[in-house]
Structures are given as C-alpha cells and as structure tokens.
Length: 294
Ligand SMILES: C[S@@+](CC[C@H](N)C(=O)[O-])C[C@H]1O[C@@H](n2cnc3c(N)ncnc32)[C@H](O)[C@@H]1O
Image (cartoon, rainbow, N blue to C red; front, side, top):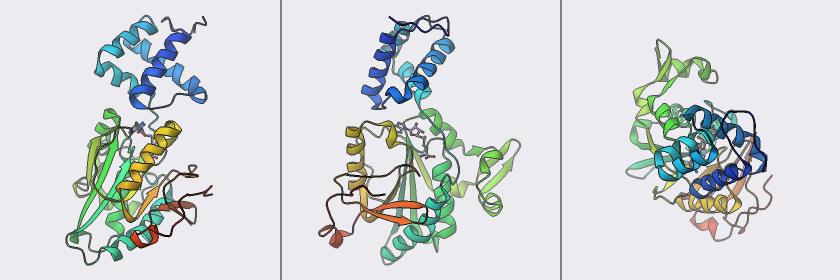
C-alpha cells in the first residue's frame, strides 16, 4: 500500500479513501481525482495540527464526534470570495433584476424583496448584494428586505457576521460606497449596521432540504461545482421551486446550466448569464429544457 512520507503521521491510500467517502456521504462534497492533491495535502495538514499519528486515528475521532467532523470539513472547504467578485453580475442586479422586481411588486403591500446568497463564505457576496440593493432600490425604506446568507461553514459565517474586512479586501468597493456603508476601524473597515441588518446569516448544508420560503433572486456562485451531478440537480430543483415566478438564478462566471429539466430561461447580459424562472403564464409555453445554454 502506498504511503505518503511528507509528514510524520501515517496516512495510507485506504485511509484517504475512507475519509473521502465519509465527507462525500455526509456533506455531498465531491473530492474526485481532480482535487486529489488539494485533498491529501489538507488532510495531512489536519493530522499535523491535531497531533495525530495516523489516518485511522483521525477516522476514529471524526466518526465519533460531530465537532471533530466539522473541524475536518472546514479544512476541506474552498472559501475563496471577494466583494463584487463579478462586476457584471452586480450590474445585472442593479439594472435588470431590481427594476423588474420593483415594477412587479409596486402595488404589493407589504412590498418584500428576498435574495438568497447560497454558499456565502465569509460574507463579501451578501454584503455586495446589500450595498447594490441600497444603492439601486428606489425608496428602499418602503420595502421589507431580507438577504438570506447561508453556508455550511460555521467559521466562515462567524467571519461574515463580524462584518470586519481589511482595506485590501475592499479594492472593488468604490470610495463612495466605502464612505457610505463602512466605518473605519483600527485594523480595517466595519460594515455599517444598516447594511448588516439587511442580512440573515444561517448555517445550512445545501444538500439537506430546508424550507426557505419564496425568493426573488438566488446567487449560488462557485458552489455547485463541488457536488455530484445527482446532488447538483436536486439542489437546482429546490432553487427553482423556491424562486418566485419571474425570479432570477445566478451562477459564477465559468459555470453554466445545460440540459437541466427545469424551465430556466437563459438571458445573456453583457458579460453575465442570468437564468430566469418564467412567470406563471410564460411557464406554460416555455421549452422544458435549458439546452447547452452558452
Ligand atoms: C468558493 S466559495 C464561493 C463563495 C461565493 N459564493 C463566491 O462566489 O464568491 C464556496 C462556498 O461554498 C460553501 N459550501 C461548500 N459546500 C457546501 C454545502 N454542502 N452547503 C453549503 N455551503 C457549502 C463553502 O463553505 C464555501 O464558503
């Protein structure tokens, strides 16, 4: 059996396989061959930090304690994110999605706007959404606004809830937005309470169905790529069901929806591809498949 000599701890291929299966079964996160190097390096780091002598010791701990399981899971998550990560997406939110919601719900009472950042990592995405809504929604105070921000990682959510960021991480936030929506602190910048209050943070594993109510727009950027086809489809089905008719679904820059059985209507807007759930009337005549939407 092949052994990896990098650390003092013993870690066999078979142990790695068992750890991989355990993570996939509980979180649905796929650690396939393309992520092999990332996976084995992170497991080794974990063994070292915990002072464990072998992979089997780690397996015993992780199987016996949800705290130990979560600690390992945290290490295997990729949490790269940034403010206004894809500017074209936020432009589409400002210039297309919000004006449409505004028009559709003008006469509703109460006027609600609900946006979901699914896989929100350390909070840059939901805060960018909240800032865009504050900037773009006319008479924002007349709306009941909720941005639901969820992630499986408790550590990332703690960071997000603190709302404290370095100056460097605010590079894509305009000076006006920094001055309006942040306060300066000794070590960086703090999100202003009125932006913070727009967001509800919650720990949620996307593969476990949870009722979230009706949503006008779902951001699920750079998350679905970590799941198997089967889980991806199940999550997309739940997103589709949660969306209001006429609601929007947004993926990351290099992600597309193709050959999915939901009736999403692909819309290309500059550098951004949006997926719209048809309105009640349109749904009856829309094709049943988003085919190779490029
Ligand atoms: C690469 S980050 C993307 C962050 C942000 N959406 C963006 O595009 O900048 C992926 C996020 O998905 C989260 N994630 C991974 N598996 C998840 C699951 N099963 N349920 C919920 N969140 C998950 C990770 O913790 C991580 O924060």
